[in-house]
Length: 255
Image (tube, rainbow, N blue to C red):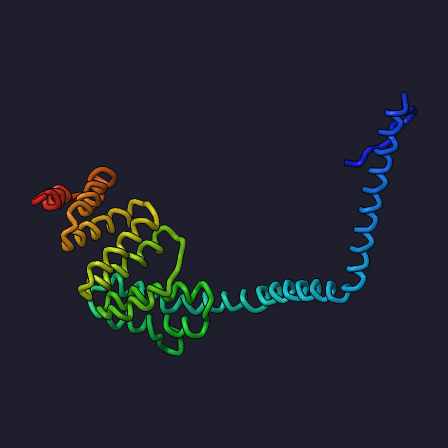
């Protein structure tokens, strides 16, 4: 650490004077080293000035390019895709509530009609947009309802969301598709992922129940009991809780 001469300071003796001289010498060496380092830094900056300015320029251009792309390309693209999504979503909603011709309505939602895009068109024409992501979810659910399970797996697998309900429903839908393909181990993994995605009164008891039933099929009775017991303890007012005592009994039998 550099030592500075205090105002009015006078050495009291030869030893004190010697120490003072040594301190002054050390201070001078420190400042000399700092001066040399500063000179070397200035010299390096001077020699590499063009390179430094070039790097700064690239970063600035990249940032401005990103902002311009977001403002003039991505946002208009998102808006256009969202507008296109409205049309097939109407058919999808109608299909969910229909008692007849469900498949026809789902096909209209998937492929569009009357010059309007369907979910599949939006996915192809507006990749990377929020609307295309939602179209993957709706397309996957449409294929699941139409019993086209491989297609359902493909589109639901491309959907990603932090939303508590949609994210869980997509994972649970994947579980349903694998269950229909007689792949219960894969189905159970997705039901468990749906449970872990979020905790809410709608999706959690639904997939606890499906996970429990699937675990029973796989003869994993301890795991099944755990899921059924959670429904009884935490979601006693859910529809899945109405017959839960019977399933708890099945999970306990033979243990």
